[in-house]
Length: 208
Ligand SMILES: CC(C)(COP(=O)(O)OP(=O)(O)OC[C@H]1O[C@@H](n2cnc3c(N)ncnc32)[C@H](O)[C@@H]1OP(=O)(O)O)[C@@H](O)C(=O)NCCC(=O)NCCS
Image (cartoon, rainbow, N blue to C red; front, side):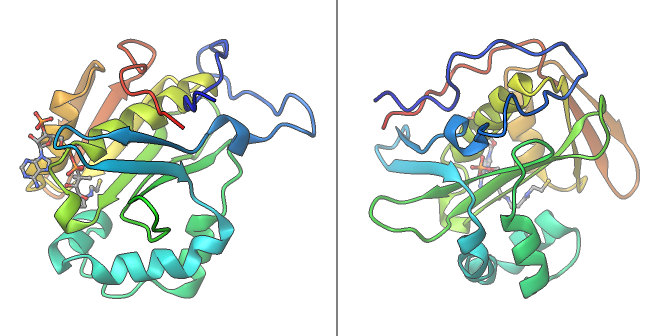
């Protein structure tokens, strides 16, 4: 089966969060598992994060360089607490969505991209982090498009990220994406807003 992230789904009315169609609504069924070959030939797998990933997420966090930890959490954070790991691995596929990237034959987490919708009709807040030796190889950009496609399906029109001003990689990633964007610079952070109601989300399709 072709594992595109989304089944061919209509776009919900802008600004409205789609309610579960039925009790059987299974966000995980929409946010499929699938692979993509990177430009350098490495095949990587994407899947929704699962509740049983909490320890894997803690291990992933510990493998990150202090710099990557700081860029993600805005402060040195050597360990991810069990409580936070559990919270970050529990999705409702409505307001809280996260995709992880893995290498073939290995369930270890190598990167995470997530969004959280704080209020109906508002933008969803996104955050990304890749394992250091996977950075700069195009995975972040793929994950941004995967998340944007799902968010668009859920009726979300804008994604927003708070980024440290010195985080050139994240800012470069946004510059290279296909969505119209605006940025507000402050001393401590840059707030980047992406308009995902425009631009293509379909660039990166997953293969099963
Ligand atoms: C920021 C981050 C998520 C980007 O993910 P990524 O997989 O490295 O990004 P990509 O490889 O898709 O890069 C997209 C663009 O950013 C630039 N870039 C990103 N990382 C880079 C790196 N390490 N070296 C050089 N360029 C890099 C590239 O110019 C690339 O553009 P291209 O497609 O024209 O080559 C990742 O670098 C990371 O995890 N950083 C630490 C945590 C962090 O900063 N999180 C953001 C918190 S909001």
